[in-house]
Length: 338
Image (cartoon, rainbow, N blue to C red; front, top):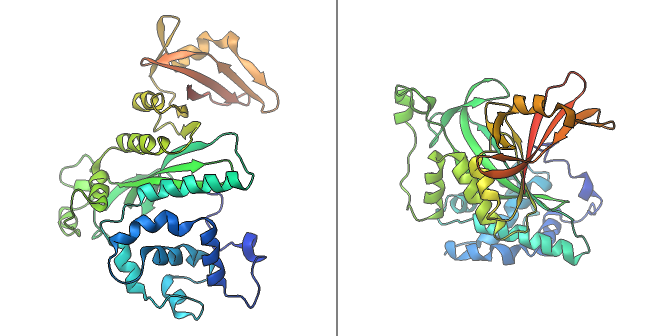
């Protein structure tokens, strides 16, 4: 989660602009440093007429840094080098053949090569998998559903977005994403909607083999299966040392996935009734904490107690870290799969 979601804070690059300089052209020139067009040129054949996709995408990327509220206001200004209008951007965004997953991975690879070329080399690189709630307000939108919001503790309209990010020690880049909905348990209210609301939703036929068709088919798949596909696809192209996740994603399937792709999994584990094999016997988490009481160590700097011990969880060798902060704190479990 970003500490600041304000995309208008561009104080880090304000010093690079002259008051009389065309800000839009300067930003587009900066994209050439990242070899932007060479990365996205594979998408140009998708759009056979009009403006090139690389030119349109470049304009979309720089909108937050120009001080304009939307693409229309940028195109109306005298600083834009394109004669395109907003319809060109809408038509591009609605193309079914836009396969952005491989392009995102190429962007991350290119960024790493540029960092190494300029003398920056990180000791470790991490992949992070997590989900977020995208709230919406209309029931007519395609595949919308009501989802449980753990922050507001109520059901809201929206999509569940699953994102795999890549952190190289300096920058965090999205590598892949998927949108999901939840059907719910009540047959009378499919996807948390009234029957009339569900029947009135927008639907569109797509080629099942197109990138848009595959993206639509993922919306009803479980997040664990989709996350594993993302991890296998990305870790085969990027150098990843650690895979980070919260307790919702850390499960038997994820632990089994980490070893073939040669990454070390670090994830929180639920303090539930799951059993771990220790010295030939199975124990629950609370039983292990009592059994290993003499193995507790103290970290004075963090004012924490912790226990490290190798275990087996459903056939997978793991190294859990039990930790408790403060005298009256609750025990938490962090799992490492090497």
